[in-house]
Image (cartoon, rainbow, N blue to C red; front, side, top):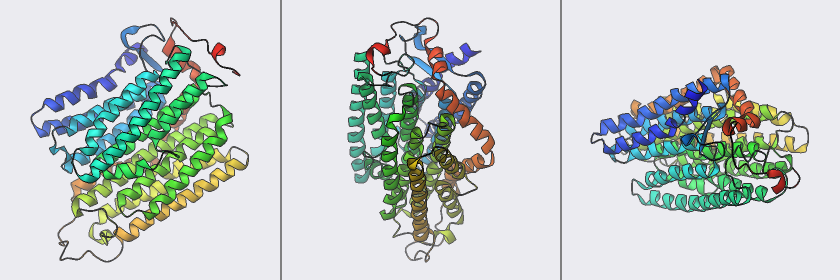
Length: 513
């Protein structure tokens, strides 16, 4: 059975790529739209099947071409990667659904571009080869450039320019780091590089370059300002898609590399904490000055990243639970922020603006969207009955498990950042949903948000509610994901097998291992 499941892994990136070609060739918009929804929909159930299998049977791996270990390109799945595939597919389904009802798919190329993006995401989440990861990142980026600039408006062209510049820089740095590792070790296989960056030596430097590049893509301090300026400049459907895919693939690989290559080395803890707390404060307070709903949400995207990544510095006491807390917050953040972005998109599609100075009284005019947005705001702040409560509590509890001043400083920063996020959401509510009614001479009374525009955001917030209600099942899944992430021996042995070749001798390369 394991061999059968392993051999199916190439289908995760392969089927979306084939579907992208079919969508491009299809002359009927209805067919293209159907393909764009069916692929992530099926992907959710395929990912769920993969999650159940890996939780019960452990890691599965397939080397393309059936080459011996460390020679071919390995595709690997454990509970962590399966859980990320499920969540990315859920968010992609919601974003694509909104694109269809919002008219984005009038462009013939939109469905194909989103499916190519999904191809890159699936490949990046399954590959255990650093160069192949770089390739899949580029597969993600190329359609993203088109999705950002597709409408041709000046704001989107400006956003596309910034997005291209930042990601070209980060991609260049990433491939330099990968080349450096290969020149030093002769391998870019994650299994062959187990623990290679622990200690002192050239592999540590090379792996550090890769982490810096991925951190830039994740939008973390000191390379964070591009994200809240770029993403809100796109359409709501594209921003929703990017919020759940681009930055979270970076989070996945940062977790994977820091465990597999750095072996959770504790000497970097203070640096991680300082950078993440600064990033946390920027994301928390930056949104308080913004004038549009989606710019405020852009900073909430930024605010979520350090909550996830700071857990890498609090693994000394119980690494499994610490990483489980980070994974829990990751999947919560993907779903919740996606819902908020699509809700704001429904407002923009109806009233032609997301400017807080031009919106007022929506809570009385559009009650359903007000409830959806309030639910998303509650979740992102950490209030029940939504997934954000469990995400925040798990993070605070696991940070508190570690003794020392840095743990208390981190908890204080988390509380302050959460309160600032609450103020930002409250400001949006006060400006857009409370207040006087919109003038009837400019906005007809019969103009309200159509239910089909609200449905995608409502579906995602119901997922967040479901994660709260069925928290036992979700927490069990994230704990298993963390345990398998930490079991680097099983990950390595499954990839390399019994017949591997040209393995590097890391002890001869690195000092202090």
